[in-house]
Amino acid sequence: MTIGEAARESGVTAKAIRYYESIGLIPKPVRTGGNYRAYDRRAVETLRFVHRARSLGFAMEDVQRLLSLWQDRGRKSKDVRTLAQAHLDELDAKILALESMRHAVAQLVEACHGDHRPDCPILLDLAKGRRA
Image 1 (cartoon, rainbow, N blue to C red):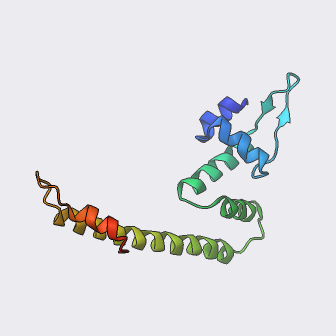
Image 2 (cartoon, rainbow, N blue to C red):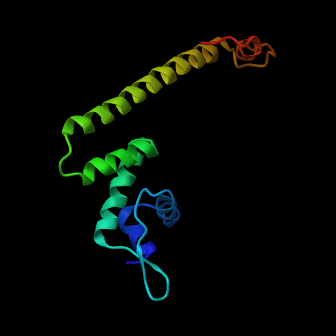
Image 3 (cartoon, rainbow, N blue to C red):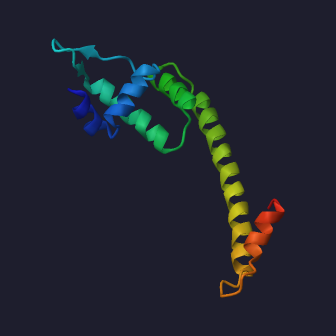
């Protein structure tokens, strides 16, 4: 199948497919007589795998590790779990940081009158450079 067909079937753009090839995340496909890329079913499955891993926020290096584990029939699920747990820990840390930022901004919004007066606690806080 063509790159466009592989893109449609996998949910990955043609540009992303070419990028994944260029960084070695997926193997370069065979070329047709007209020098077009030709993808098989396995390539589409791999692209779907990559797409799903990226949609879950895994970094490219982790996607590469996950791909290697997926393709290794002798893998240990412990290795997969360890990688996923590390990602989960990173997500939890990001969520805590976002919740802290949200709380600080909510307090500032609450403190601002939002009327015709020029004074604004939001701008005062930003000018002071305080950290939440």
